[in-house]
Length: 548
Image (cartoon, rainbow, N blue to C red):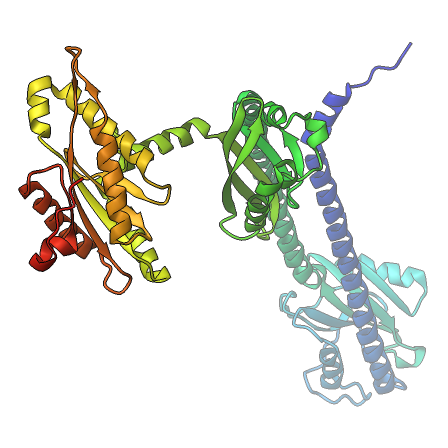
């Protein structure tokens, strides 16, 4: 047989639920015991202090009266009450005796009395708790117990006739020589027990009320605490459930996303890598653990990665870098976005790095950029991009102190070709001119389409004679081409070219364009299929026909 016991989970729930109440009850019991001990100690101390005071006062009064009454002839008769302040011939002076009895009343409710041996009260100094009376009466049972005890001094507690209530008293019997009318006298000093303990009662009630308030406050406080604790536990449980669910969702997303995701420590070492990153690098997650992200990249790409990781140590703890990575599918363009997670002290705790394959996006951007710079028909730079390149060549000529030449080219009778053979043939003519320009010019030269049938070329480090030779070669090559038409026939097209040249001292794009345009207009006016140089076109004395 095995003894039954609560399962561990139930035992934990019981402990978690009732342990605070048990601890509170124990604390309140201990507090109650301490308070009761304190009150009892105070009660005993008050009782002891009251007894000591009464005993001291009774002895003082007894010794004093012994000195006054010793040796009196003893003519006092029972029942005789001498007049106040009357000096008797036997030496008994009532006023002096009353003065002694009054002197030992140290509190308003203290009373004192002088009792004869037969139990009759000879004199009495009443306190605030004793009603005044002409006849003090006789002593009660407490005096008889004192007589039976046979002691000179005793302490008693009980009820006194005519006074009522519980009284505490100290009795002291005078010596044999201090009697009156042959009877021994006893001094009694007493005090109402309620008066002695009045302060203690008030304090006890106050302490009890405070203890009750403490108990109520503790109970309600613990109930409120338990309620808040239950709410907090429910909130924490919900938060834990949400966290687990979010972690599961995060893991599901990270493990199945096509983006590369890596979790790194503060030093940039890989803690976890998702399958996409492992596939890219050709390693398992365990093999990547402990290595740096920069260390997994090609040599020429490590610098940017290391700089990005270093930048995460400073707010706003974000950085990014782009790099090319060789894969089985070829060179891929990757962009990494890194986010640093800082603690409350602002120090970097963890890094989340997300890499995305932006190859297709980069290709699209390159295509858009190419379309923005290039004429789609001739695949030459368009007007805007051509003039941007012209400015660069002009600045280079100034820097290297060289000549720069500009060719402006216009097709002869191009509109007639479009009208006679259609726009498709016209497009073939334009495309053929583009191919001729690319084949006839150097790599350092730049050619572009600047209008419908207008083209231009800037020749770097080329003077006027060199530009003329290039123009002649270009015109001859294009004139020799036959452009097929839809009808099967072929057409030949000629061009007019204007040339302008400037040295580094007066080289400017505006001047070159203006002079080349003047030369082109001169070539057209003189019969087309001509080449004119700007200096000859401006100066009648140097006018020369350089037609090929």
